[in-house]
Length: 254
Image 1 (cartoon, helix red, strand yellow):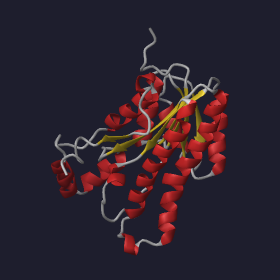
Image 2 (tube, one colour; image 1 turned 180 degrees about the vertical axis):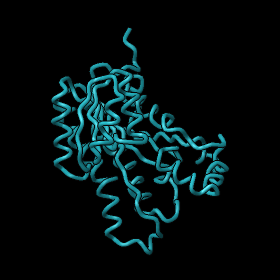
Image 3 (cartoon, helix red, strand yellow; image 1 turned 90 degrees about the vertical axis):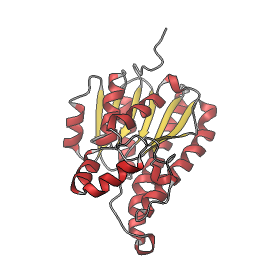
Image 4 (cartoon, one colour; image 1 turned 30 degrees about the vertical axis):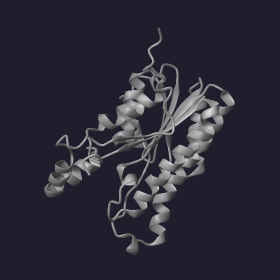
């Protein structure tokens, strides 16, 4: 019997794969037999992640909001052979911290170009390949609990993640007849390198975040990555249009 959790011979594109959750998704999917196309802006960081992967892979350096990067990733997937099975839209930015009233429109544009339009461009391109192949597939968008709440001072980021969840539901309905399942994963606070540095520099913030969690801690990177890989597998064959919250119960606690 075939293991429904394996991804042997299946090609998966992972954006934002040079660090954090994206890098961990790449490692976990490779261990499950996937062949990977890793996309990020830093060639050196991508090479570092790629050196840890046991399976076939290709690297694409570029910004996800650039149509040339999208085309290069699709070409790289074809170059690996086999059929494009999965896309993990992980790339995202959150560089600004100010109230909506004080946020200039160019900052909204910066965030939406990457977090929403970049993801939409990759999803559109991948879906076209999957439809033509007639073998189904998986698209996973990286949301956030920020898209389900009203966290202050990060309005563009909140809006981009809420819009990404809406896009997920729409794509799930449109692509379902083609056997393509589309879901979103919404992590809470996860101990990526960036978050760990932030919390080390601000112990009071770390205490507040821990206090809000029923589990009494922030999440580990692999705890966000493994559910994403699960959604790529045949074990998740009847899940689509869903936002999977991975937050240690933070939203449930109010």
